[in-house]
Image 1 (cartoon, protein in one colour):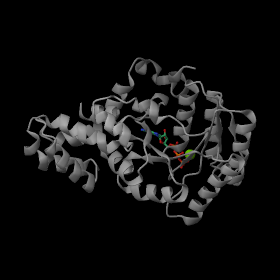
Image 2 (image 1 turned 90 degrees about the vertical axis):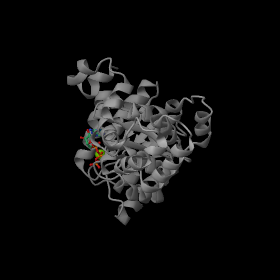
Image 3 (image 1 turned 30 degrees about the vertical axis):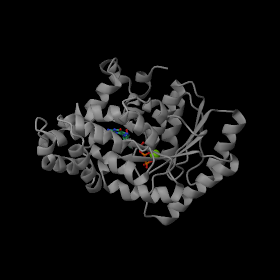
Length: 321
Ligand SMILES: Nc1nc2c(ncn2[C@@H]2O[C@H](COP(=O)(O)OP(=O)(O)OP(=O)(O)O)[C@@H](O)[C@H]2O)c(=O)[nH]1
Ligand SMILES: [Mg+2]
């Protein structure tokens, strides 16, 4: 299937041949602007610390991480500020200590590949309203399909009729079966049926959508735990993956939400969307720090190929290039 024609036929020609790195760079241009405004790249690292602090805070890297990064830049002994910052940032974006160590030693781990190594066969996707869950699921479906996996969707947003219909439409376009229920149906019962259907039909992957919800609504967070439990009843050990979709535009404000979701359903990964619309892409640092789970994919636009597996080295390279 042609990536370009499925999600946005109109842009097909302009984008053909544009590499992911170029898209990523373009998508990060607002955050790059935030940094470029303040950081005197030509200065020696120890002379630039104050400006660097200001820039990192402005990019939503967070106070604690900023202090540590400044220390690391200072201690690196590097004469090149950009290089020192790149190295410090990568280590903060890499929660996997083993991979971080390999990077330090100069070995290039295949981070993008390991970002998509799934622990099981069901991914539950959660997040606040409008974060990008449903479109992310469509993109993930297309991604894993392109990796040769047989994918199913569960339209678990039964809160709005349009929620189920939206995923149903993606499924039709992508040739991915979608389990849907009537508006107002119990999402836990639907997720149970979907998990059972995946097993019965021996599909490689089931991705379960959920209705957007505010982290402060206790009953809705409880409903989410119930969805998770009922998947486990239909298919013990699943969902092995629970991913939170976070909109980068919300910056650090999204962190409180993220922690509440983590408490309710124990996340195994995050997907950060809309980096193209945010000048605060530094928020990836506190996201990794506070949740302690890896970023699996990042989104820099609305097209299918704008969502790709996350690699800290590549991200930092695109950000500070
Ligand atoms: N610019 C940009 N837009 C995005 C990105 N990811 C998603 N969107 C857009 O964000 C909007 C909301 O996406 P949805 O997938 O409907 O969000 P949702 O989380 O499912 O929303 P609810 O189901 O209402 O909670 C859509 O217009 C998407 O195209 C991204 O990386 N960049
Ligand atoms: Mg949705």
